[in-house]
Amino acid sequence: MENNVNTDTNTMNHKVVFDTKELNLWYSETHALKDINLAINENEVTAIIGPSGCGKSTYLKTLNRMVELVPGVRTTGEITYKGKSILDKSFQVEDLRTKVGMVFQKANPFPKSIYDNIAYGPRIHGIRNKKILDEIVEKSLRGAYIWDEVKDRLKENAYGLSGGQQQRLCIARTLAIEPDVILMDEPTSALDPKSTLKIEDLVQELKKEYSIIIVTHNMQQAARISDRTAFFLNGEVVELDVTDTIFTNPTDKRTEDYISGRFG
Image (cartoon, rainbow, N blue to C red; front, top):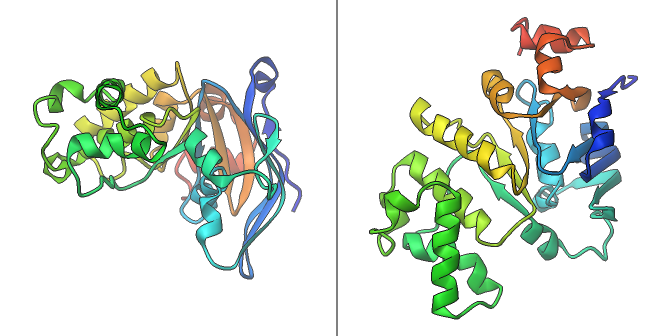
């Protein structure tokens, strides 16, 4: 099937952080991603929308090579991160995952104190100095808009936090290793509306310093928080454009049908 992707001219004026060319991915015999061509701009929020099973999360997990943890996965094509091929065997996956952090659908704090959740990554990277760790913990929690809520509870177990707080803690934990890119896989799908709004506000703030790619089922959320939106269907990118254009004047009938609720 021909892949008529509208890749918007907006990309020309921005630095590209991830560039995907002719990416195909199979789970054993299942062809999950088909000829994906997609450029992700620096310091923007790129939303990926589409019905369940269309390849959104699979694509996201190719960007930090977590998809390779699934048995029977194979890929062809190219993904470059800041001009370097990440699928090249010489590219250290540990380096990639330091630069490309991930926040999952369900908050997954470690069964440790709030402080130790944030300090975990920096410690793995060899930071032992308590003063430096204290600074990283505070800066990361402030960066995730949760410092004021937890500053007097740092020694308490992270499981004592609410769902929304746990998700912001996981974002803070990602910030602690100073990534360039943050991948978010439906980060608000398990949260109440108030917590969702806090995460959305946070995403808007974070894009000043980070490039963010967010998979979401919530089209209103994509419309509210993203600069550009990619619509996936059956493992293909149907359309990529400035978010306002995707939602008000898409070029592909399938995009229009999905956004207007005719399927999905």
